[in-house]
Image 1 (spheres, rainbow, N blue to C red):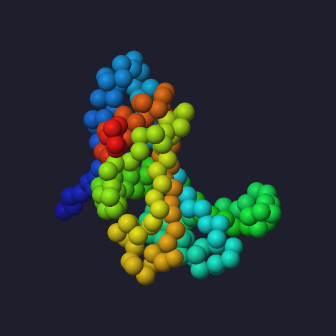
Image 2 (tube, rainbow, N blue to C red):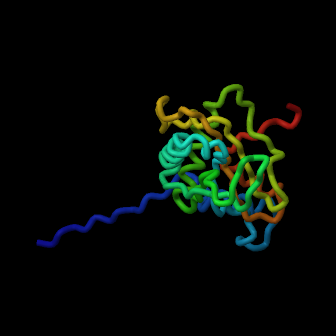
Image 3 (cartoon, rainbow, N blue to C red):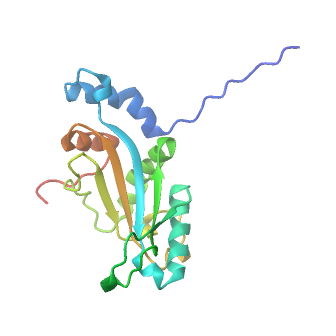
Length: 193
């Protein structure tokens, strides 16, 4: 008796599917690009947390490492100082921060949660700044408190620390990168505010 084989379709994040099926073609026609490979592309998302106070408080580094691991699903690497600065009481080689780089499906999942769940939970939120693009089109978003992420309980968010989320985008100019992020649903603030 022959058994029927079931085909399992691999999971694809919502924003990844949206980009491949719809946004690529839309962006190509809106930007008048002749080649599909010129369309703006989100390459990676880097999450940083600067923890200069961690040299005095070891609990801060442990808390930040646990929260970033829960938020991103990856264990962060520790960043160290490259040179000594006496006025900051900093020695070369001190652990001063954490960093995670997300690519592929993890990147799209994190961006989806950030846009649909985390940003609307911010207090007095009127949209993200549209001035945070650099010359290459990369976008930097700063969060002052990690407690807005639903994965974290209240006990896990003390002591509080900030996060910086950097969207690394391959684009010709920053206007193209902004168009890509707005198509993904990034809520940019209105110009007159």
